[in-house]
Length: 310
Image 1 (cartoon, rainbow, N blue to C red):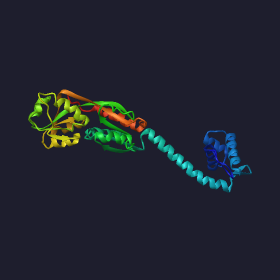
Image 2 (cartoon, rainbow, N blue to C red):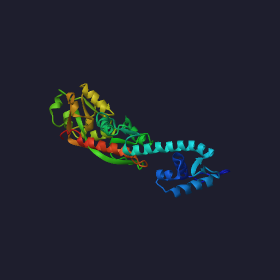
Image 3 (cartoon, rainbow, N blue to C red):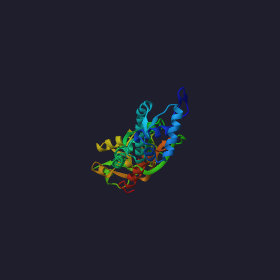
């Protein structure tokens, strides 16, 4: 540290470290062992510190070091410094191991049914000290949330955004399927074509959402275009309506899990409507070690997801 005052120059962190070690051990040789340096090195650094301060820190009495009153006052301050250093190192190593800190993520609501909760459960089993903030967001709010720094990353089903400020990485794939209540006439079919939906109450995504645009290709593939009777913005809303037996819905495949089959079934469309799952983060904010570990857990959960035959 530079900076002179009327009494002398400020000490460097290394000089403070040596002073602190000598105060703790009461000996140059013991301070050297503590810092993994030689006794002459400790003596030189201590002498340079006293030269900078322009007053002694220790008196040599009968071969022993005796702290001066000034040294005792400085020692109390140095204790606070090294307490902060210890906390810094605890945090630094904890962040590297995923044992501490906070992870903030957002996702399309489609993944809030079970995919993200399952991943959080698996991640927390290995990293119980990491606090997690999770928020499902509509697609038009998800990117701004990430770019404003409110989340470390997001998970969404969309084409990589044409935005130089957003980094995208494909981590999996899904497809749109037709969720059909138990007992519904279409439940016996293995695949659903657009014409099969005619005459049945249809629940579909809002046209301007990514899934809405994907579904439109399918709904326009029949003899004449189909329009949803009930328009929703997210998969959980569609599933709630299907569970009530209101109608059939086009939903994202990761919104469904075989455990849900007591209420409804999911059938692939013909033709299949695939899409990519993207991990998104601000381009100027690389993923932390903790975020990368969460992403690895998510990839594994996607890989192990119960297969639904296409």
